[in-house]
Length: 127
Ligand SMILES: [Zn+2]
Image 1: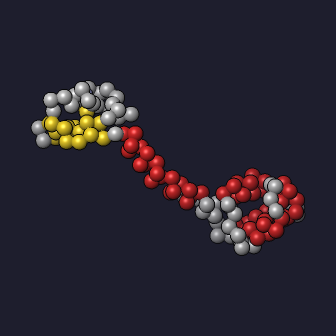
Image 2: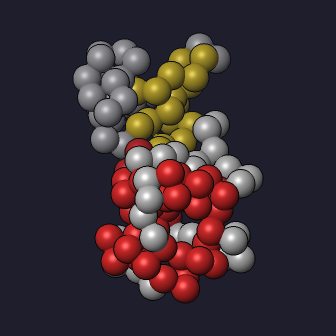
Image 3: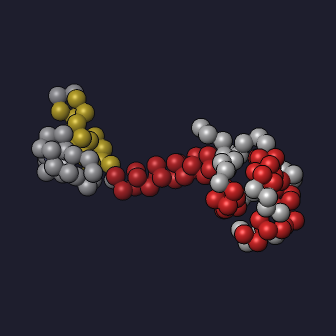
């Protein structure tokens, strides 16, 4: 929570006042008898920021390395796990995993997580 620039108390609604030409962010009490420029509701502001941040995060999660299909296949083969068995391990359809390995299908986040756990690999692009 933001603190009043005059008394240091935490405030709900922020009162932006003008004091000798300077803008100060103060609480309701300190804004009394001051020239109020505008008021801000931090709960509304927080909501707006969340909406803005969410799609960014989502986008980052699905960035896969360019050759993720080959990485999955190579790792699976090095562990001697047939595709059918891997499919059973992570409760997915064998033909769907085959499509992922040949990169005909981009795996959803959930499947990426399961593959990474099952094969102990990372197929996500590092930022
Ligand atoms: Zn105050």
